[in-house]
Image (tube, rainbow, N blue to C red):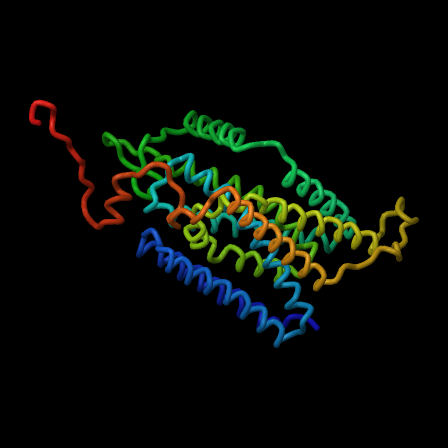
Length: 362
């Protein structure tokens, strides 16, 4: 049973309206969301995804609904991993907290565009060349190995970003200070770029790398381009609020990358087995299908994904507790520098400068 056209079109229109409404809300009310507000939005988007899965179950069958849930959870886990890099970018470039909402929304829009392009390309390639599953599977296994055992640390990542900063500064005039969330500002009567252009470039590169990883992963769960795209949309919806909700809690999820690596490796193996089952390459089994290659069901995949994330999260929290961490940091998004505009935005008053009396006055 295929997904009805009216359901696909209606779903895409509805999701587009929700994303536009979310964007307009940021433009009209730029602020740092509270923990309560962030929690309510995250719960709303998660409930919306589950409701969508239920509607899919009613309209079609349990197989499509299961593929959507498994794909959504996979993309959601990879999106949480993406947040670690967002934290690094926000901290390194000292993005004002009052501007972080807009920055995150731009990052999410870039991610949606890039993933949409990769989904269309992936669907077209799969339609023509079934052997591409061998490549997807090998790539995911390699990515899983790097995710789990790569020795690159944050210092190396900062060096890469510093190179990006130097490159952009050579190509264009960039001011030293932010002007809210503006990309361009006027200094001494001349228009120049603000550091926000560097932040957007860093976010774009990050989104590109994660799209390369995530699209083969979800195509290992379903070959429906509609399910792949909607799962990505639901995974990215609420990511902005999740950033502020988790805050310093991200530092406590020290084993999350192992859980994600296991999921990627599992899907990689599943893709290779699927490629063997559908084999058309003449140098493998004479171009015939490999009958002994098992097909892993959607529900087994769903169980592995949920179990991996649960084990990684629980193990991380236990380890954090043993290391003496009590409570997470305030869910305001990690920013090492407090800008005057941040304080003014929080208190609703102009920033003040505290002065101390001189020694003579005392």
